[in-house]
Length: 330
Ligand SMILES: [Zn+2]
Image 1 (cartoon, rainbow, N blue to C red):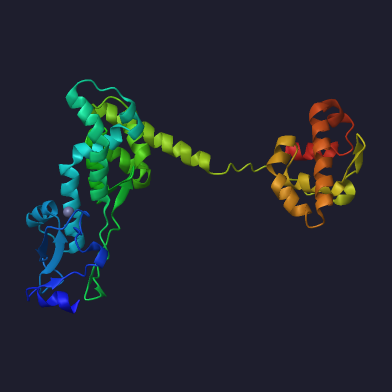
Image 2 (image 1 turned 120 degrees about the vertical axis):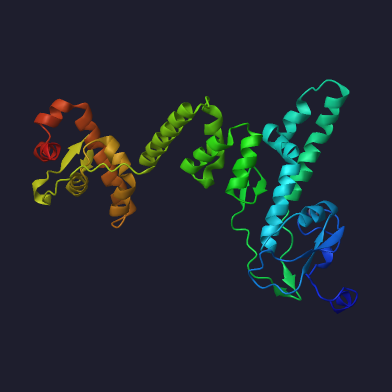
């Protein structure tokens, strides 16, 4: 570190460069060309000396046209310029997969050339925009306030923020930007691919058509939310006294009043409802023993199946029909 400082001009500070990155652009990972001398504009943090940041030739020229109040903002703006400049390259990944590109038959020299180099161009551009640099320190002290919390990733590509992502993705997927913005606002930033799929498949881009699509999207999401909430089957149970419940034997299976009581209390009268509550059933009766729980459950299955299949028996002969009737009328 000391040696490096000696041949550096005074009146500026250099960010620390780990050995393995000593020939690397901090912004995009390409080979080093020159250090950009950064001064914050506006200078909120009262930065005194310019900070020297290693750049490749391209990022260096980007930097010269950017005003930023912090290094993280400078980085984001450089990335945005890279995105814009290599927009077509980055779109290759949106429109093709590597395999599709290999399999397709382009005819003519120019197109064959495209096929051969397209995926490579895409990967290089992707690596550059995704490159995160190394942690920023000066003389070993971390620089504060370097944030990438707004960054957003979609389909393996990092964007500096939601609005930049939407702008680029609208172009890549050929969707009017304002429409995609509206859709993303409804579905949320975590579901970009859903938003893109929706926007792409809702054709018609007149404002009336868009409004109708947004309306149906809202309805769709509301429905989805309702479905994702566990259905509350508020069947009122009946709290019966154990002594009021008759033990019975069906097909050589003993059906325990204790199990019947539990089921009545949960409002379980069908096999389907029993299946829904299977976990709760076992959790409750495992306290006794696994065998008890299993025997009780098996008994209830036999009992409820009999009641479902033989409704005459259920209505007229089941010794507990009064309790089940009570449950049905609740
Ligand atoms: Zn660079």
